[in-house]
Length: 72
Image (cartoon, one colour):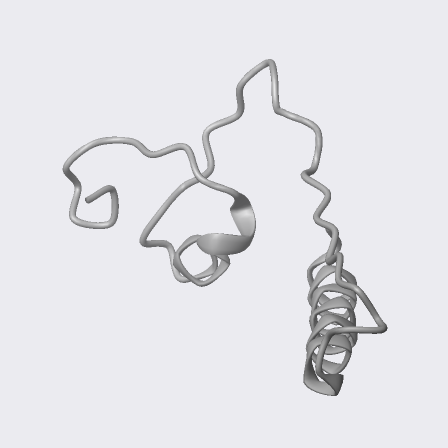
């Protein structure tokens, strides 16, 4: 809705990087921002299927590459 000029939005910058870069949205500075969220993948390595560990490792890799590419 913010992209359609219907108001403002509070979302993680990672969700709107393209819109900010393209000028569809403008970041508005404000005095407080929350600390970055941390996510954890937990699974039982003895019981989980192999793809669960592979997916967790892939998610970590993609997140690290995204953060590095965008200075986050």
